[in-house]
Amino acid sequence: MNIGIVCYPTYGGSGVVATELGMALAARGWRVHFITYALPSRLDRFRENIRFHEVEIPSYPLMEHQLYTLALAGKIIDVARYEQLELLHVHYAIPHAVSGYLAKQVLARDGIRLRVVTTLHGTDITLVGLDPGFHPLVRFSIEASDAVTCVSHYLRDRTQQLFTDRAAIEVIPNFVDTAVYDRSRYNSAALRRQLAPGAELVLMHTSNFRAVKRVTDTIRILATIREHGISAQLVLIGDGPERTEAEHLCRSLGLCEAVHFIGKVMATAELLSAADIFLLPSQNESFGLAALEAMSCGVPVVASNVGGIPEVVSHGENGYLAEPGDIDRMARYCIELASNGKKWHRFSQAARNAAVERFSIERIIPLYEELYTRITSA
Ligand code: GMT
View: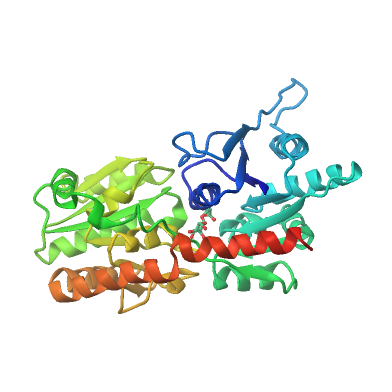
């Protein structure tokens, strides 16, 4: 079957999930067409069964703002028509679900039937979609989609509370390639020496450094741990609006030698495998894909007990959860893991097991395949 995937191509969870999904489907024989404004960041090389269609945004002096929603709809129409797409899977409601709906209606006039699946990821529901100007559009496009999925039960509940009484919203959790995100593949000891020379404990965090991630909390957690005499270091991967503030905080706390800003890295599996603990102190998180990738590498997670995180990280089994902003408690949990090797190993194994048993590609991709088959044969 030919399937179109619309996503943000940038460094962010929804784009990562969409790209990994497309690559996994292509490997299983589906023909996948990515439609977006730039090459998705994880689409690093040519792959059989994958095509990329770049959305170009026309400009004209009259139009002060770019017309991405329309340009995307136009591109979807073109690709659907000429590549015989049966199904379009849009990731993140705004504006993708609206463009998908528009394309579907235009194609229907020519007798072409395109089914639209919308996957809601997080702030499209919990933040951006709540803008009064966007709310009716998000609500409409959820109700008009042929199928809607959410990445966690938490997000489905929020969607139903905030937007719609549509009952048919399926939860398909995010997934991880456990063959790639596998500590045993990498020389993590050598990498650890390069990343954080001399560290007794290596903390790691990856994100797009938006305010919701509370990146500066990771630095304060590090500071608290070091006050207890543990020579911990922190590796920060990614970039975004909060990076400057994080750098200033390191300087003001005298932690420049202990905090390593790596910047954006596309392939994180090797880096994650060098960590002892992954930190995700977010204000909100509908799932926490970065935590799952760390767990797959056998890294216990210390995170906030918000949103969908408890559906991924089990408190006291493969990580610890605390209230957002409770830096002391998160630091105490890190110290507990750092000072009890047996416990760390138990948590590490449990993290890996959870990734393999509950969130592997082999387990989750068939759920999408079953959904696609169901709605295209209806
Ligand atoms: O909602 C966002 O912040 C955007 C999105 C992204 O593209 O980074 O992140 C969300 O989707 C991820 C993939 O499903 C989830 O793992 C993240 O938890 C979620 N972010 C939030 O809910 C803040």
